Length: 417
Image (cartoon, rainbow, N blue to C red; front, side, top):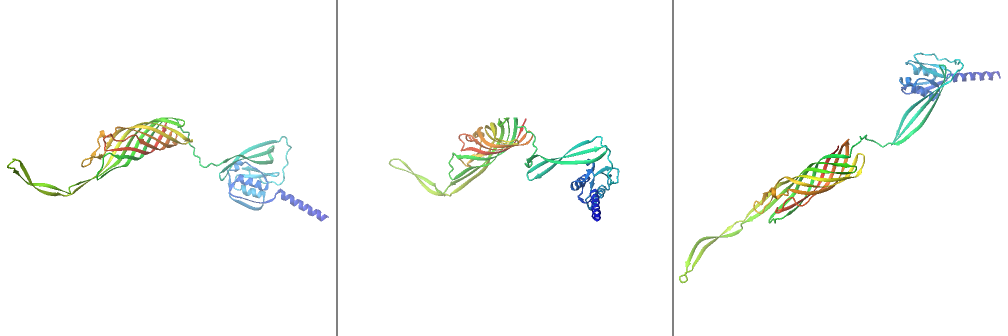
């Protein structure tokens, strides 16, 4: 019985000493000192009091130990810093500029005159991004410290994590500025045209051919008007140059026949009636065949200065992009011309005269376009329109009729005042 009581006392004393200063194994990667102390608390529930704002500025290297006391681990972690520690009860206090020897025995605590509770709220934001979801967490650390005079005897730490909100990641978003897209505007533009000519000859071409082929057309202009919500109205001023190739092929055949020639002439007078009869001595001469081929090519040109009216409507609209339909009419005034036309006599072509060209031509058009905002008051505007010219380009009496319609590909910039 005495032996059993002796063994029981030894076990109790050993357990008590182990609980006071247990041996631990601890490892941490390179981090700040406050993170290492928080990990020590999280793994072994050792109460360590320190200033997080100060220790977060101190970096430590990677650390690892096996079966060391808490005091030895703290000494290793604080080695090379200006901080030391002191054990007060079951808690270790980290202080600056005073290296305190750890004490095993608890110091007597004076009678508590007043308990003071200090509550510190700290908010950390942690962003967890997975796939296309962003989760934002607010972590609130509540530290309740009960103080007796200047001695900290207990620290309770409660960590609560709440989800504040959840949103779907929408990808790249451009911080567009606020645009102005209403009011008065001007819109310079440049256009390239695909021309189709309606050609009909009024003169028969015997053993010949005549044709016209579109070459090129372009336009420069300026639109101006007023836009309210989805509707725009305005006027247009433009210069347009249309060119086409005039081709003439004509073949003339002469000869390949016999021509009579008079060699001599005599006459006989009738003795009774007195009439005179003329006699001719003839000979025939062969005229050989002669072929003459006329080939002529020229680049005809017509230049117009046009004034018109237009209206457009935005049928699809977003904050920085819109699509619209557009219609208008214009009057084109002839400002330049050049080229040739076919004639009935050799050499079967002649230069075009001014009185042969219509001086004013009316046209109408309709199409579709889009507008992309690029800066605060500026839009990039591509358009496609179909334009039809009314009547023919040349006056009555010209050897052929020439009508015109074209596809107009336009690129412009719209500026709002």
